[in-house]
Length: 96
Image 1 (cartoon, one colour):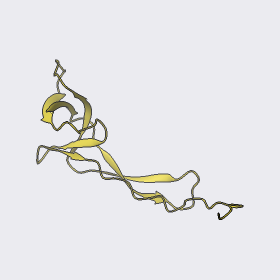
Image 2 (image 1 turned 180 degrees about the horizontal axis):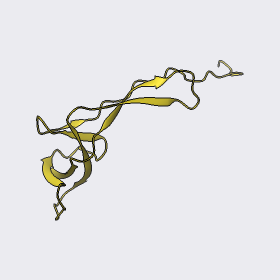
Image 3 (image 1 turned 120 degrees about the vertical axis):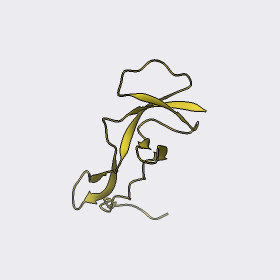
């Protein structure tokens, strides 16, 4: 079991889509309700200043890829972004 530092001052955002016809793709983000940032994951705790606090977490939790739900008091994974719809097509490619 590891430990995660939670920063309740920072909300977490997820990518919900992409702005059409942009190169490079521009993400559309939305705040995850009741989210707080997982700032660091460590084996051992150490003193942190308020309002930061420690919480136990699973060994596979990674900072900034997971978030803390302040209502359920669970650590959850940030949803994966949808694929960008404006992938450039290749020109001059050969079929082998």
